[in-house]
Length: 116
Image 1 (cartoon, rainbow, N blue to C red):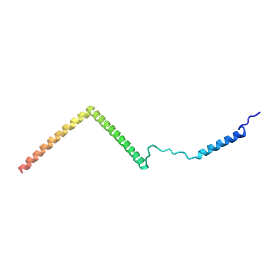
Image 2 (cartoon, helix red, strand yellow):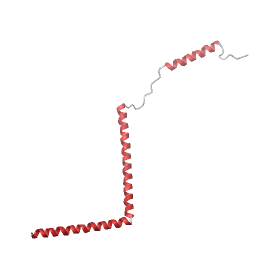
Image 3 (cartoon, helix red, strand yellow):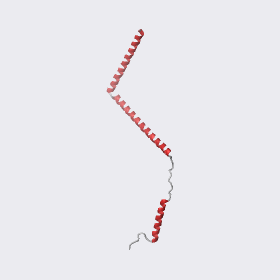
Image 4 (tube, helix red, strand yellow):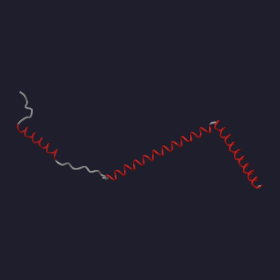
């Protein structure tokens, strides 16, 4: 003999009542979940703006440090380059000679102007 799937009449009524209760539970209002710290839209926008500013400042500082490191590396490379050092010495000598020449010319012109 086959067993009945739902059982007796009273069992079917009980299961129907439980199903009805479960359906009604869906429609009951549930307690709202409130955040511990409530922040307004303005506060949230201000906080996000501060985060963006802080991130950009950090990125800018990192870029500045990277540029300084690159400049220092280039300076050290130039210091170690003998050809460049010779060129710097030649340029200093040329500058010194041109200053001496200009000073002598100025003295000569002053002396010439004093005679006139």
